[in-house]
Length: 258
Image (cartoon, rainbow, N blue to C red; front, side, top):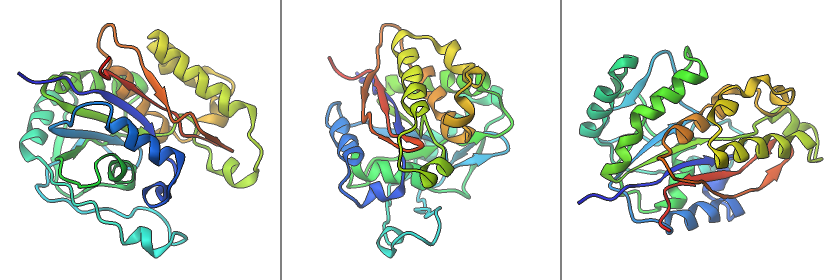
C-alpha cells in the first residue's frame, strides 16, 4: 500500500531563512514532522521560470545560489545535495504531455526549493524534482498543470509549491510600516483556499490591491499548484502567518493526518 502525501504552499521569503532561526523556518520544520516522510518531492518554485514546461531530470543536481552578492558567504556555502529522480521526472513529463513538458538537466535546486527543504528535511536524502513555471501560460493553465500532478500524491510524492502570496520588494525596502493590503490580500487567498473558491484566486488580478500585493506573478502563481492538488473533502491547514512590509510568509497544507 502507498500513502497519500500532502500538498503544500509555502511563503519562502528571504534565503536567509535557510541559515537563520526564524519563525518561518521553525514552521517548515514543524510541518514536516506532522506527516509521514514522503518517498519523493516535486517542487514548483518561483525561481525557475522558463519558456515551456521543464522538469529536472538530473540524478545529481547542483545547489543553485540564485541571489545577489549582498548576502553573507555562509549562505553561498550552503549545499543541499538531495538526489534527483530521473524515473519520476520521466513520469511527470508523461503526465504533462498535453502541456508539451520536456526533461531538463540544466537546472538544479534553486533557493525557492532548498531554503525550505533544508529546514524540512535537513539530511537532503529524499529525491527532489522541480517543475518550472512556464512564463507563457495564464493562471488557468498553471492550475491545470497542477491538477495533472495531483495523483502523484497517492504514490507518497509531496507536492511543494514555493513563492509568496504577497511579494512586493520595493514596498519591503521602502517602509517598515505594515501596509493594509498585505494582510487583506493574504486573507483573501487563504479564505478562498478554505472555501474552495479557486475561481476567485485565478481571477486575483481583478482585485484593486493585486497590483500592490502581487506585482511579481512568478511568486504568486505557485499558489495555483497547491490549490489544484487539493482532493475532495480536504481543507487547508494554515500556518506561518507572518507578515513583513510588502511580504506575506503565509503557508497552507492539504492532506495532513487528522
